[in-house]
Figure 1 (cartoon, one colour):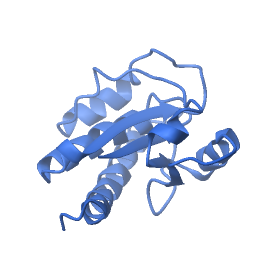
Figure 2 (figure 1 turned 180 degrees about the vertical axis):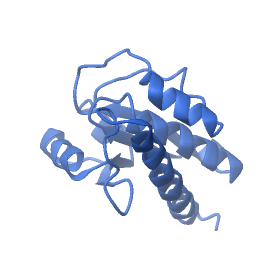
Figure 3 (figure 1 turned 120 degrees about the vertical axis):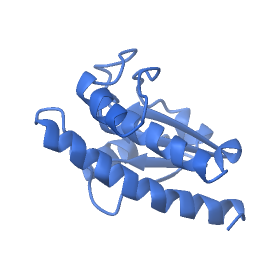
Figure 4 (figure 1 turned 45 degrees about the horizontal axis):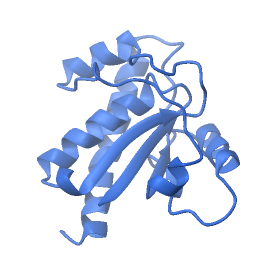
Length: 153
């Protein structure tokens, strides 16, 4: 089992979108039984909240249902529970490195995509579509990476 945590700032736009997209792509590749996916935010503003309505609407137009997801904050235990913690941008990556507990841990902390996934919260529809484009592309790459890690490719 490989455990993956996707992280953004508030856990209401980018990371829940990435959680569901990655989960569906893993399922389509037959890897879902061996990979657990979750999401969290570095901030505490949206704990317990559903994903942003705009994120849900744009995701639904591409066949992704975010409605059951709820915001949560990254916890120190996540660095021991997860194998991969994937940040949406450099600021999230820096925050994760700051939040990481001292001592041994199993989590490898990296960026989710080859470019930063911009926060669409203060923008319009194009920003949410851009997030989906980047998340779908990065998720395809992670499915291949995880297949190699699992020895199934």
